[in-house]
Amino acid sequence: RRQNLMVVRTADEQAMGHGYALIPRVPRFFKGGQSVPMNLVSMLRMYPQLFENVAHIISKYRAEPFFTREIPEIDWAIVAVEAIPESRGRNYMEQKTVIKQYAAKYKANERRIQRRRLIDALYDCIVVNAVTKENVLGSTVDLTETKAGRTNLACLNFGEKGIRINDVGRQTGHQQMGFCPSW
Image (cartoon, rainbow, N blue to C red; front, side, top):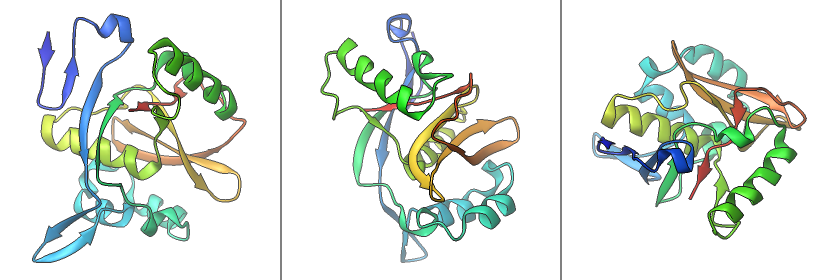
């Protein structure tokens, strides 16, 4: 059994198919006596070294509502550290079917298992990296619930050069892209 502070990989990993992380999510932090919202802008400012291309993210998404308005809700979450294998290579709607099957497989309420928003996925990547120095989403891409533009959905992964954020159409499927269940 290999165990870190937040990322736990157990002997049962074969049964679950992947590792999980327990994440405490907070909507804001204090810096210099000021309350700062935990949004995409503040994460880009605080952790520019973790991103592949900060300028690209800013130029592409600064007009999107999620850029400044989306913040994590205060909560604890258990999340898969990579996209689950059954969801990879499928488009958004096909992944929704996989979420239902996943919930049934683990006898969970379908509403309890969620697809993450971009801010939650990004926050989770940064927290796990800050605490364990491990990169989650290193071999897969998480297709999030966050809308980018009129029809696309935001996705992210932690590539060799850092965190990459992009967006794809709902009909797009890719062998590395899936969803990371959030309990």
